[in-house]
Length: 112
Length: 112
Image (cartoon, rainbow over all chains, first blue to last red; front, top):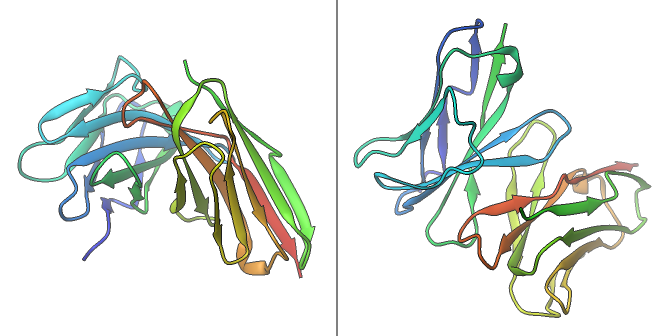
């Protein structure tokens, strides 16, 4: 049973470009969470989704950031017009219920 | 909003010494989870505590959940170099649904 998969593992973008981060949850998991982690810091909750629904997006910036979890395919975290401050590791986690979360390997985003 | 504070931020120990990290929430929690993240890696679930005053053990690791369900601790007995990493607590508030609020983590280094 494959774990949570994220791609790309590393992503380099220039300021103003768009970044698309993908997350495939573990088989059978319908809950997906996105977190951002800056170096030497903890994980900051961004958004919680279930299939086709955004349940809680209170941690996501109102502008430039969006997330989706379509009926078919992976969850996508989209960052438009990236700025240097968006550079971070973005982790996706999935769960079967509201208990233990399984994390993916993360996408390290670097904005030049 | 809910805040989860964790101390200490850093801890350096000699191999064989004990280690403890403490976690405090600003609000009562329905459960608390602990994760470990190795350098360059992703968070890995260790345990979940649900009941007031609960104590759970995993080999050399002992986890406690406070009576008021607002604080928790992780104690490692006789640390080994394989214990190196950052330990995060994550609280699930009584009114926050599935959203986890992570502490800033305690970064443990073990000198051989």
